[in-house]
Image 1 (tube, rainbow, N blue to C red):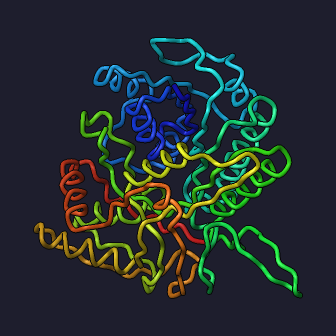
Image 2: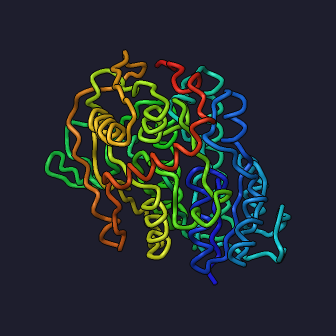
Image 3: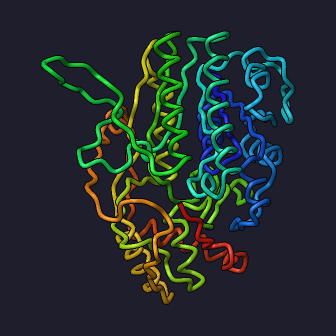
Length: 395
């Protein structure tokens, strides 16, 4: 049985990923320090519904499936905690079988501060973002170097590394001809936040580890994710993932759905021409699974652009408005002064065929998908706090 180690296993993507692999027979261990939950409490931003602790989630999963997800609570910026995951000298916070699962065949790395606005609240939050994200990644590559160079890492990066260049965005790499000579380089990157800058540094750290120590790494350049229901969470609402709708941790489509339901004008920044690549949460699960199944070669940094379709902010707002009105909501769109320093109209043409070629079957943003999101969110309408939706963090 293949052992999957999920770093950041309590998060929006981490917990659904744990269930997805467990259901398919993998031996799953998750690690988290509740960074996201603690940040939400500190900043007083609301979650749509209460979420059980990671240990309680693992127990609920076992009750429904008979399958065990081992839980480790720990801060991965501490190098000794990271190294213990490969040496076996740690204790599970909850497990029926406490036996060490052995060195993981695959590590799925989500364990990072994931928010651009958070990274620019002030210098203190910028420092937290930089130290957390880079220390976790650096601790991981050194643990791999010292204990398991054959373990495959699937790292979830971001399309935001590329920025919005005035050329087509290739999947991670670019062939360059200069003064009659050719070479292959990482695609030029120009992040628009400190969070995205740390993700560029992640890629550089991993590329260093690949070149120096022949590590095996797949870096998934992921666009904004939407959705909250997966095939596993429908078993029991206690298995649903964390869902934020605030400006700091909520992704744009998730925010728009919540705003529509409570008659809060949809917060489109500036002209609304900002175009990005998006994907359904169920496709994130497919992508990491297919990446883990196929794995990178020894000494390879394999990069995929993890998106399924592109939309502008205006296009998303109009889709939500149309479906909301169909369901009886009075949905208005408000173009706010843009609190972010970003291009509001730009060229955007990324390549994203690699994951489809290894077997991912996309879910597209249909009216049915949007209606389904409305139906789930409206069950928790009374929990929505209008005061946390927009705080106007600027940079």
